[in-house]
Length: 78
Image (tube, rainbow, N blue to C red; front, side, top):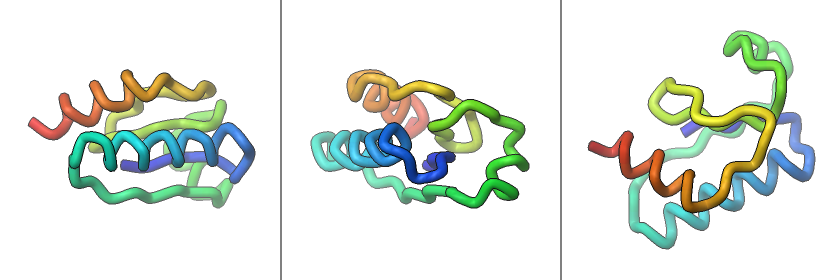
């Protein structure tokens, strides 16, 4: 799981929510929080925060509800 964001409140909140969902569900997944603008530009995503799971952009420019993060993680686990 990759989070793209400069370290702003929204980016950090998305990271916290993702970690909370992993803890609640017991799903095992690594976390990579990319804050470097050059690395973020490689994804071609402008609005942050962005959530990427298994190389698929699940959200950008918003903090999705934890229920959606859980749904996406469960879908990608299969």
